[in-house]
Length: 359
Image 1 (tube, rainbow, N blue to C red):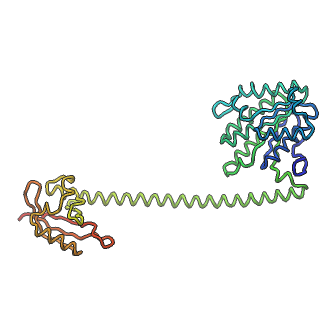
Image 2 (cartoon, rainbow, N blue to C red):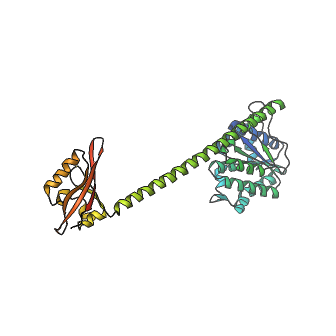
Image 3 (tube, helix red, strand yellow):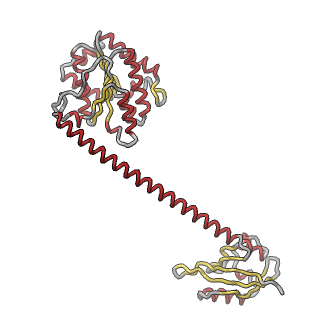
């Protein structure tokens, strides 16, 4: 009987059955494993338990309460209690169990218990659950296969256990199916088994089916939403790429325009100039940018008037001026300019400089 007073979920077993018990509550698991082992132990058969410290301790108490002489069985070699993680360390190579090491460690322990008992043997192992919880389902599935290979050599019944908490993602469905396929019997979690009648179990099945349908619908809606989101993100990336390309085109247009272009800051210094403007005056861009604009104007009164008008937010169109080149020569130009204002503050001018051919 389990802690809720219901009959054991363990099925009648032959000597080569491989059963998997899914569980939600550790107390239920201990009761299920106890129900699996107790009849065999009381009948003089052997047993091997490979579990965590907490589960071994709880299971030992369960067996003793059921009338099993645990210490005596261990002393006579009929019962072997092993730690799951320590046992795993004896045959794991990297993330996968090694077949030869498994046979020489776990296989030898099974064979020895069979000889000691002189009869049947039941084994319980939760090493697969430990592997799964550590993020290694591939290793757990391979270990299930090694257990099946061992059962082909030594006739014994085996119970494995998995927490249903291992299977909480949509992608876990295929892995759950793989677990089930590696066992001869599959026992569902206690929320189903603890129903006290066939009608109650049928209602539980209907409830679970309805929940599965709701989950399926939610998953399909999520897929549609994710598809729409991916489409929107793709459209955004295309728009961003188009914007970057447009910005590159504008930058290329400004940098390589045949007409001189420059920005002057509120302090009168040149903030930016394109190649045509610098080359027109014989400068490299590095030499030109950073100079005060008055340094390149041949007539101080003209540049003072230009800056004053721009400071009053006037626009200049084809304003005549003379610019002094790096070599000291002077060029006649026409300047068209306006100011970029932001929040009432002078940011920089937008100046177009066109050389006037000498007549």
